[in-house]
Length: 481
Image: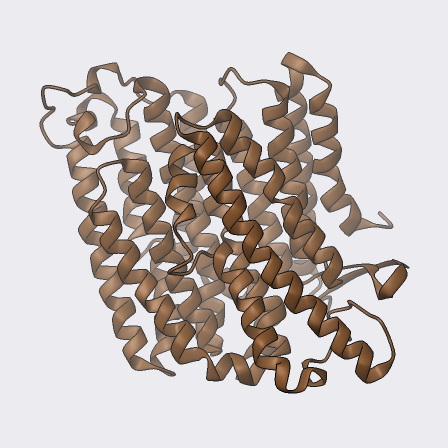
């Protein structure tokens, strides 16, 4: 394979093109190309694990006008998130298998996977921006065409918020590249070649422009209002990709661009950004407690969980960086599983309210087991994946700004306060007069296979986290302050 990184993002895009022309048989092509994409990502992970000295895989291509170049690179951070993208994309195809959807549905998921992979691979900032914007199009259609009753409003709101954030990011990137050209006479968008010192007094404005663009995608309070609507209206598989991977783009942007280019500014901004991250953990949990819709509750919980990731990353300590990055993966697994199960309930009953069910544990024991397991992982039960990431992220924050760590601990407590009562209301409380629990059949073999895979990974990471932490550590070492 002479161009392994190009093949990695091009394979799902080719699958999207094939699906668009296959009509009713598109689901088979989607499954085949998703499996191929997962295999390629897995092979790259194994390549890095088998060759510890090979910390980065690079691929260079032509250089175009104004220094724009085709430059791809993959380290353990990139490959880990690409592997998560490939895995969740395959899970989404398997979970959607029995849906009566057109070929475009399958094509959109593969196109989204391709664009996300490009974001994690691009080291030319213009190429990065192109892939970044390309993720908006398939997700807009996934929400707007196959979502719930208020899907068009949610899709437009999602697009406008995230596109507006991207505009600030683009302006910051243009300022960075232009300042470098004025200082050196050379046009380049190569991340490795750019130096923020050329910005002079404009550096804080550029830094905050980048932060604003990434904060919308995370989403950071108060730029979060698009997320609950998008999650609530998106189909279950769309929510999995949105929460599991797309929200990670903002944190990845901070790790890949903002923190390396502006190390001193990012550290001086820690009280503000860390304060917002800590506030997000509490605010997201309190909002989740107030919800009566299961899907909306999980959507607000995502805001809280991303707050933990940010606390760890912004601490710039080895524990915080590795723990926050691992928590990105943990959140994708646990929240993805919860969104899928709410989707399975909605497919059976067209209901998602806490009061719409009751006594489901006796009617659907497999569903009760998997939902309870994923809920415990989500709230950070020791022995499961959420505990490892949250503990290390909070440990990193504790060594820098202890008050933020204490706020994070409060967020952990509040997570149990909304998740466990919701689980009890749906699965163990007596069914009320309006209950639709009688319509709920237990999980079939395909659905159980999907959830066994997700919960197995949650348990694996929880019981044996060291290989996962060691995998991410080399890519983050240079960010430690």
